[in-house]
Image (cartoon, rainbow, N blue to C red; front, top):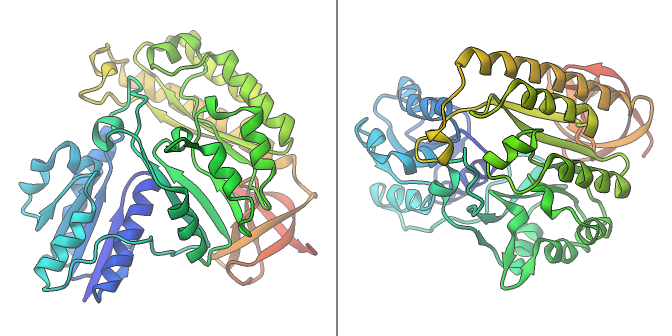
Length: 406
């Protein structure tokens, strides 16, 4: 029996899908994360934007094109938001984002298997995403996710360490909906980082809120054996006025100060971010502040999105900007972000770096440096192994590299 587990959305969704895949394999299924012919489909949906919801609903038809007789199981944030929309499409089973373990129970029931629940994720790449918490209490005015994922809940340090010990991947990524808020019975994210000081793997962090950036936190990261200095500090707007309306709890100046603190500990750090273009209250002046902060901070990469009003959020009640304005600003933002990314990579041309080989793309071995520059090397290399590399020029979304001694 074949099962496809297909995912839309964030890295947390990917981690949870990997857990579903691992459990399905224990039930005797052969699994894939690519849409293809299968006996069952598990579709893990996303609701972060209207477009993501639309794509989530379309997944059912896409899966049935491969096998109209297949059983279809749906989970995730979009089905948490509107379960009936999927039940009306005649799927086998629907649950939401908070109870994905029910997928395994439903499959086991229909195929006469014992329900084994969700275990550790299947590791399909050289980078293992370790989910340390779920949920969010921030309630940013534009974001629907806290209403769908629920309140913050963190895992025990012992459970996290146990999962890390079981993975063969050379790199781990601490992952969650809001890992900055990690806290289990008084244990903070800073404490968790210290608990990882003996881990012989490259450690990377998922998305962070800038408030977590303190001298104590950065010192703890310095104590890791192999820390990947990439800091994805969610920004959303370079305007203090817009940040206030978004219910983001920092100013433009405070954010910039946090970035300066990062650079004081990790001069070569890649600071990456998210910025929303065309938020409901954003003026042209506000938008210009989002453009200018890109150069001010020296971002290594900018993930840009047009504002998508989500019903049920505070920002949904605000008057939305015209679609043409949002589109125009998004394109300008993407262009400035692309220039910043190239400028960051150029800083490291002809300097010795390392990268972990991951996969082959069009005859080139690819992988990432600690500061998250994608490397393309024109020779076949062993996946999961660390190599010395020197970047020789900008290429696609990263740089060409030639091997050197570590």
